[in-house]
Image (cartoon, rainbow over all chains, first blue to last red):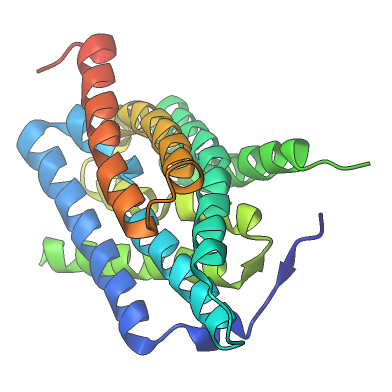
Length: 139
Length: 114
């Protein structure tokens, strides 16, 4: 399965959808910091993997796919739900990468403060993409 | 002031990964970026700067449990969408309860702190 970028999809997203995601991202980050300060880093750390943004992303993907079908005069409800389910399946593999990110920070943040974040990003991407490739491999 | 920096850093990181999510095809690959470490990058960057490596390390350890709960959450969302034909908003919002139970429960069981 070939991975490609469809840049026209950026034009499909409306300004208020960008603003909503910015707002949600900001709020969740502020909340994660507040929880860590109030209840300690053990509890705060959990919320670094809180799926708040996923909710907005999956809903927008479903809406865009549905609208694309409806512009052709067809019902796009099933298409929208199917696209959101695919995003959910992909995020399942991404979350294993996210756990690897946490593991790298756990092991390396003390000896290598900034390097641990860079390495954690590389590990996240490598694990997530490798799992996705493995599951979607076709001869 | 610190919360304003957190808000802007979180908003920027999340928006950047969300744009990748929009652009990439197939959607199962784009889904990898729906579970990107966007909030983690903003929060841990600030934690490393303000509190040091030991504090960020503790957050990283808990994040592993949160991420595993995210994997279970994704599985449930997928099932709710494909088997029960729920809307994306209903499926993602209702499955959040599972994430909260698994993340907080596993932290209590494994790390054992209040």
